[in-house]
Length: 416
Image (cartoon, rainbow, N blue to C red; front, top):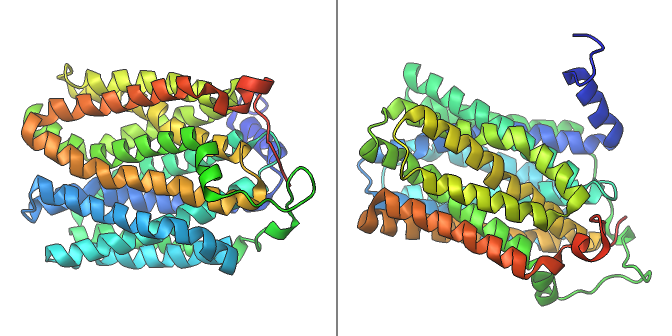
């Protein structure tokens, strides 16, 4: 209803009033388009590989090749951004991903698919580090989690649209068409960045609190952002494992129809979409790490609950809640490392942060495939729940890493 308090238009106006840098919205747009492409790809990848008679262990190893690409390029990406700019790295990476995802279903041998996944990961980390660097450098003081939560909303929207589009395409077109559409979405994101994204904020203009350039070592940065790194490691491990093996567990152990499992990522993303902004606003107010601990405990319980669930509707609800909690940890952990790091170190800290995300993605599918084959889907789910419980405990031990635990509401240590 027009003029009604709390309407979509009112919410949009509130967002526009809080975020004045329009380049942030360009990043949201590129993220939405790429997220939809990711949604198409992840919904069909394991099913496509299974149809090509790849074993579960091979599927897990192929996902690890993707993560290896992320690991190999994460740290160099910070240097590339400082050399060529975040904008240039973002555009190049989006174009590279478009090529990789389009070619993926046309590759027949394990070696060719592995090479494709390696480059896929390399280009993906280029998108993540450059996008996150642009967001954190342009986000206003005290709004890091708000801005990164809307970044997560953009990802969530894409991940909702992508699986729905994948299911439609799978019903009426060959699998090659679906992956080509994913490539087209990434290409569209690159064109949007070319047309609308302004040059980077000059990092040389940023200074530490005493007016001198920061020379923080990599070791110091890692220790400063360790709780964020554990959070993103756990999320990378969980996400890469669940995407590959939860659909197969539901088909083999729960009797869920194959076409229904395609929608699982959409339920997860819908939860992320619904709650990530709420989590972001709460973390800006009461502390990032405190919110992350609560989300981890709830998400661990939801993951373990799959052992007992038998109806698809209940499973969909559990996936939704898991997305609302565990996926919301990702933008909050990004915001936390943004508030404890100087702006001139954002590209370096984001690169380190993504190394841990990639390490989780690298280990998750491989270890989960072994657990799945030896202990079944139940063992796989319980070990994922244990990982989130360990993160919650780690976050409690190092609660002082969050500025909010020392000085009240979370604030930026140093800003532009």
